[in-house]
Length: 332
Image (cartoon, rainbow, N blue to C red):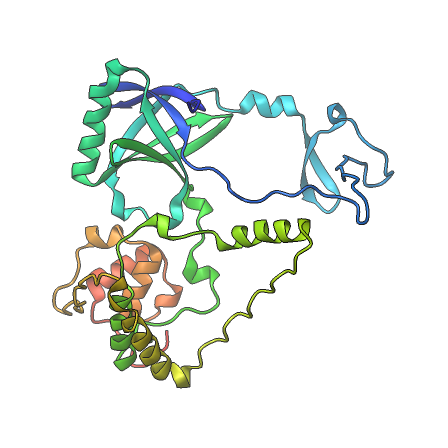
């Protein structure tokens, strides 16, 4: 039986339900010890003084924040403990938001949430059903192991899941961070039609049991083969990048290969995407729910002038009111 790593109370409005938090995943990575080559001697890490090379006792180690080259602000462990948030017994839901509006990049670790006792099954089930039928997630903060977490409480089949979320300042903006991103014009025409048909041909129901960590399987096989003195198979080379000139031929060949797989996959019908009408401008409230990357993509499709230098708020204003503020040239 699993052991709860945190216990407390979920509250929403005046309703509360005592719960326990359980780890939802486990690591299957093959772990190795470090040995000195040619021996069975384990390698141990020691804390040593960089200048003298002498080993330092853990009690004599403090934390230092570098404020300039070689200059540190020293912080004692006790000082960090004094400002650390106390152990939280409450996970208070402050907002219910549409689950599909939370961008995947914000999600961190996943935990199972269980009621602490048969007496709380009804309230627990009520909250799970309400979240499932509305497609909402409960946003809450709580403290565990001297760290505060932003979380999303969501419903799955018969159980509530708690997923930690990254704080807003921890998520990088792809438009600002990445060197190259395609514009709205890239990937249109016959290539897109062929790519959509390929996606349809390769579509299948989600079944996590179909997928395996083949690298870890190969690591275990490597260890077994070496232990038994067998020959070790070498991995195949990675495929070369697709040349743009050959894109249509590669897509066509991929589609024929997928169709040749027969009825192994069940086709999922797709809805044909339709471009928004220029006259039907989106409302500001709708635009404010989009990420900056999504706003930038729309601005690219509409050729909004100066979009690459706009803030998120400026992109909202441009898309809501300007609609017609388009560039004559294609580059931003």
